[in-house]
Image (cartoon, rainbow over all chains, first blue to last red; front, side, top):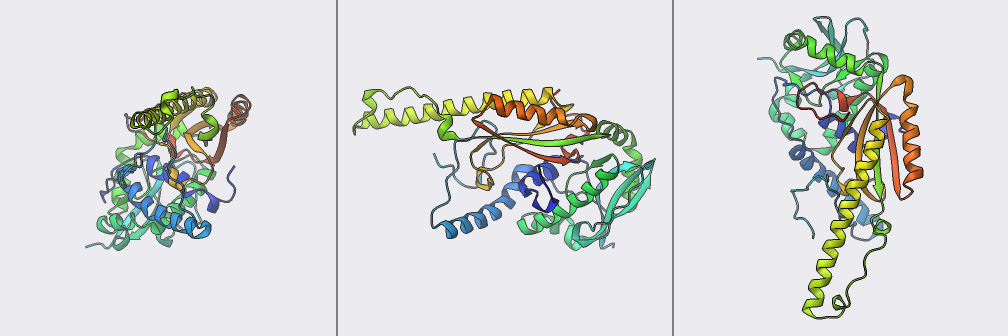
Length: 81
Length: 261
């Protein structure tokens, strides 16, 4: 179970804040196309996480594992086969 | 020309007034806008940060996104702890309070229905992971022709690898369906979110299910019992529960929302 909200996984949060909640049209129209927006933001995070991992472990971060049917397709970078 | 907008967190019924002490997005205080028997929780925000152009670039800045998401969530969690609350999606901004009042008036029925749906209910997240290496199990042995260094052997090995990957994918998918079905049977409603990007994984293993389950507050333990049953039945699966959540995943009131029940 999660404890203090500060420790909530940002990914779990974004699943809900971007993918959940009533979708109504505000006056400021941002089409939060989940894939576009989150992928772009996530790229920044992935880059920093990977860099940190590599510097700590001196190895390349592991490649994505075989994706289940519902995996988000990461369109930003070419898929490794 | 106004230089501020009204940022909306969500809506509650006027009969259950809530005051939220925590600061909201952009360090702005949280206040209320009332209309049609409903109350919207809002913050005044500068358009230099929350106008269209600014939002577009901010939302690509992960640090800003995280700060804003957490602040937004703090408000929703505080409100939802005190009364039934219908959260709205991140970054919903109106020109002014009057526009929010108009929203409440125009959509009062749909908000009222959504509030009823979420009243005295809680969301729980359940994520399931498998270890792809142990999950392979007994694979058919490669044909002898796949060993060796010839071009044919190479192609056979590639084909076998692709077949193995495909089998693993199919098994993971049907396992995920099985897990979700059992959890759904023990919840009021359920919904599957997209599998989270493996590059952001905070746990070991391959995620195969990212589910959200709505339970009646009086019987939340039914779901945790169901998770324990799955742990016993599927020792190769790691199950993580998150929650309690204000029911973000069940607040959609558009007709196309897909829920399982």
